[in-house]
Every structure is written in structure tokens, then in C-alpha cells.
Length: 131
Image (tube, rainbow, N blue to C red; front, side):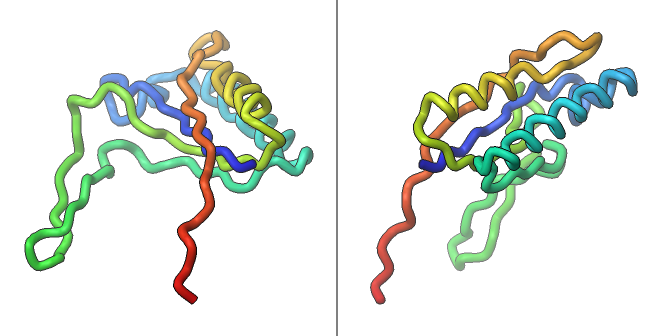
């Protein structure tokens, strides 16, 4: 079963909260991600992983009356943003929750775990084609 694990992060008072961190805290944070991702890849569970650009570049898009894109944003009032995601292929939701809990423990300033919220959702199949 495939699951999407979505990492939400506080915006802080800038584009990303981590931009105010000490360099060694940032390095420890990134080392943690690299170890988690390497473990998932070695276990054959990692399907995809992507970090997202800073929230100041996010836009909400709708189609205008003639179908052209109409954009809105960024949204400075929002407290949290989607920072990135993993797609994992695991035996069941319990394993997806274990991975999410590990991701939640990523170190922040001073090495303290951030306890970041990680949303876990099962990936459903694509709609059937007409062919």
C-alpha cells in the first residue's frame, strides 16, 4: 500500500522558520533527513520524496471564466505550510505511522526534536481509463 506523508512546518517570522537557525542545527536537521531517506530507500519503501519551495512562492490557482489561470497568494496569514512529502510503499498504515513518527522527531534548534505534524494519507489508485 502506498501512503503520502506530508510534512507541515511553521512559517516563523520569515519565509521559513529554519532560516534563523544556527548552521550546526541546520546541518543536524539535514543529516537526520538524509539518514531517514537512506533507511527508507534501503528497505525498498521509498517511492518518492520532494521538498517544496518556500511559501512566498506558493500561489492558489483557479481557472478564470475563459479558462485562463487566475492566481492568488502568497498567504502570509497562514501559520503552517506544506514543506515537503514522501510517498512510501509499505505493508500497512502502522508502518506508515512509524515512518511519520520518525520524521516528526527531526531535530531543530539545539538538537531538540521538533515533533512536526506529519499527515498520513493512503494513496488510492488512478481512475479507470476509457481505453
